[in-house]
Amino acid sequence: MRPTLTHLALHVPDLQACIDFYHQFCGMRVIHERAGKGSKIVWMSEPGKEHEFIFVIMPGGTDRNLPDNDYSHFGFAVDSRESVDAVALQAERAGCLIWPPRDEPYPVGYYCGLRDPAGNYVEFSYGQPLGPGSEAMPIP
View 1: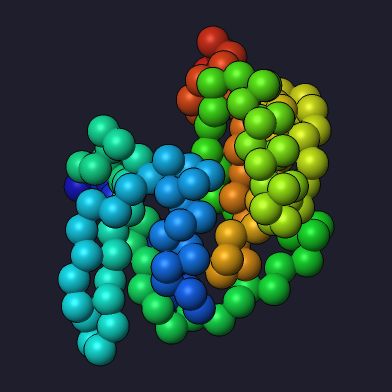
View 2: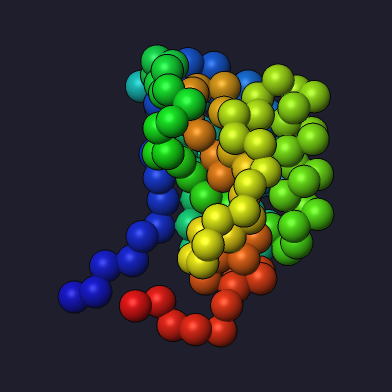
């Protein structure tokens, strides 16, 4: 048996704010919603990846209240350093930028970090060995 990671499920304090955040910053869209135990359950995915990986978000969570130096996060790859800068600028204007763009040695690359409405951190990176801009060397 070889398991495959298919989804991440999160309880969030404000469902609509999280839907809006992941649509605005990550390009994800709602692909399914249903009633569930007195609330609405929403599935979100990147276009074209609906059968690979989804976020399942449900109301009822509490704010994570992570400190700025906590690097727990969801990671999204973008296609250029300029895309990292553009996301950071958009996030700064929206008041949710927590890590301004910075460069780190391989395999970290160039990245910035945002705080979603539930308090989760979301990284946007270029130059990691996962996604656009990745090095052609294997991960040890």
